[in-house]
Length: 235
Ligand code: ATP
Image (cartoon, rainbow, N blue to C red; front, side):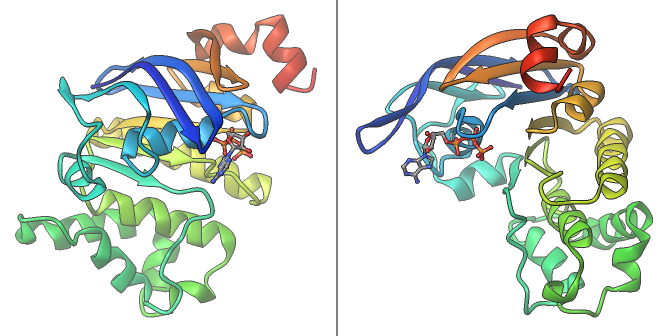
């Protein structure tokens, strides 16, 4: 579904990604873990076209998307939930969700998807007429994920969904991510500092250090890898 081939991405003279290659197959949950500043967010930005790579290739469903606009990439079925949520604080929950469906042509299915989301996150149903900015951090994360789902993505990119949330809410969000993947076969690329939960949820994981991929294996094997344990699992 997604292939990165030797991606090099820069901010001015600073090289943030060095020869990054990875692959995500349809229906998988893949995680990218790494320390602060390793290049995880830049990897997502390079995929979604927000920070275009200087060299290398991004293939989505076999097609190069390097030179496409972010809007075109979304319309092909690739949606990013950014770090820090970025919901529209003055719009209601329902209006935020409507924004996610903005590019869709199959308007008839939108209310069906809205019902699915309200089943997934009943709290959003309760708060449907409230401005997004009045929700708690966890609820805003649920709204950000839901807004992306309203675009019916084939591939969902999640940037640190656990950031700043209480452990009980984090667990709930990870359960929902697994459920979304199972219910609709949505492929998930999850960038996380919470390596423990991310590797438990993932089929496979990649480890990134200083802009390079240094390890890849199944989530299970990475969880029991001594280097990963020492560096990322606090063991
Ligand atoms: P975090 O977990 O803190 O979000 P990360 O793994 O997502 O970290 P990135 O945000 O991708 O890492 O950053 C990778 C490198 O690029 C870091 O050295 C960072 O300082 C640098 N960087 C990120 N954004 C910019 C920017 N807008 N301008 C200049 N340098 C940047």
